[in-house]
Length: 124
Image (cartoon, rainbow, N blue to C red; front, side):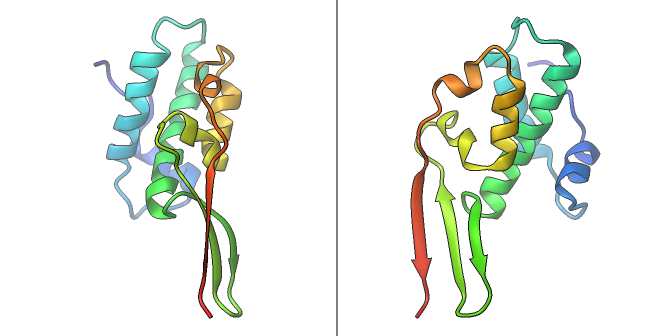
């Protein structure tokens, strides 16, 4: 496997959180770049941006348990989108994954995207 295109600091800057080590998320993102987009007709700069947004996507999925779609403080309501079984299909569940799909002009990241499974939790 080649060296990751983005750094811990790059992802922390995008997320706005310098307290978390982004290495596991960068590694996961780079596997996709290395295995799925290697040899694709994408510039190095575009691949770097895709990797950045993929790493942010993986961070959000772990941090927000699938990506918060709604949060209400009064009467404590939160709504999450849960990742489907397919890792690539799950890219559409966060705004960062959606950006990675948009940046991938090969269409590979969006080709297997499915409708996210939605979950709603209510505390009464």
